[in-house]
Length: 264
Image (cartoon, rainbow, N blue to C red):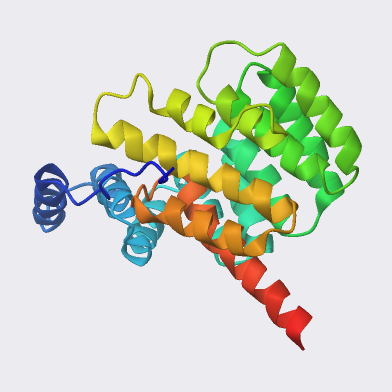
């Protein structure tokens, strides 16, 4: 069976118009600091959604220089630092987010993931466990907790994920957990994942997530060639703002580094 696909997302007219409009507004000299900070933030978000990360980071830094009390920007910068392997800078950015907004769930999750990629597994496990316990019904929290737990005790991690899967609700993301566990076949899982999606955007978003976690499953099992192909599929839909797209590049670089080391 051919893998399910979606048309890769392309820049929309609305996104292009908003970037042009925001750029024009930033040329107005009468803007106060707060207005200018907000416009830089808005344009940065548009750039980020198009995968133009350096332009986005420039705007986010400009916005912070005008208004440092912006937790969402620190969170995004933390993700950028994680993507390029600057983990200490990522931890500092997420810490800044949580100082400004202690209940920011995205920063809590992203800091745990950064700790995982930075090989600080014990700290990552503590953080992700707390994050999972805040909402045990969230299948993506269960998946990330499993991915981190595997590093400490693979068999125990599998058993715990199995227990979480058994009390699942009807959120579609639990199909990804079933796929990770081997409780659902790829054909069955992708059929369920595609059901209820009415447009290409929704399908591209779901497939980005699905291929990332399926790739991670194969990677954990040592099937690197399969994992590489699946990570590339996760990237192919251009859902730039999803963490699964962001971290697929990082996973690929880690696989290639490991393969080079094995061949030396």
